[in-house]
Length: 344
Image 1 (cartoon, rainbow, N blue to C red):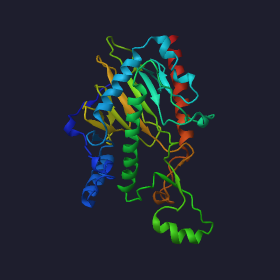
Image 2: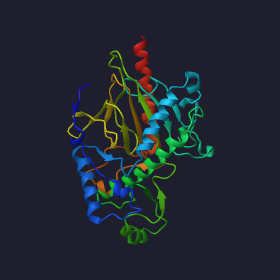
Image 3: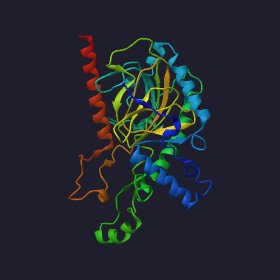
Image 4: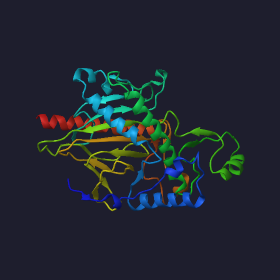
């Protein structure tokens, strides 16, 4: 799998740290405008960008998360099996080697999944909400990893607002759902339209959002593997956007021109992704991946502003949870077909 190697300086850099700390220090209008302009340019011209971790995410927590992942994977197989993601009702925990659903390939990785910590009363059929499962055998696993999750949540909300504002939409566009309390359309038109959103602020992205974080490890590959066994196949994620940090080479990104590039490694940057894949390497690679979705029952569809008779919706609307479930089921089916083909 070929990809052009780029230097770190060739990747778009958007310093969102002033927006992350805006609750402590006011951001000058011209500074905010420049940040949003940089984001818009990167999204439209490249398809992704990087953000510095300084002032955004704790480098100590990032390093601690990698260490906790190593400590967990070093446990005996019998112990790790207690935390298998298929033994939990909400898909939290360990994904063993070669079990990651991925289209047409067998993925060469291990992972540990977590999300927002919620009571067991949230567990229900078809939902990924509820409590996490934490390995008691690894000291500080829960404390360090969940602290990083909380930091990525703050960054996620900053980016949700920024993505809206860079297109001149109200900052809460992607964080609240439109559900007007007024039964009189005229009242809504005269009151809510002026505000840019309806006055009943129901969350699009709340504590019930589809927002997983994954600790992924791609072990070193000492011998050539078949084309159908890779780190992970080319794909887009199932949520709104993805934030990733990596400590080794292998991540390929598809830019807006349709060319694959290899993302360079940098300890002090996180990246936002588009279409991507991971190739096997002779060196171990780890990544911390934060998926940023809406609440499961949020309907994903074009905003009215962007739809017209001449420009109709390109895809059918569906809820966030329906989309994720459909994509995972499809990937699982393809994985089983690929394994069966390899065994025959």
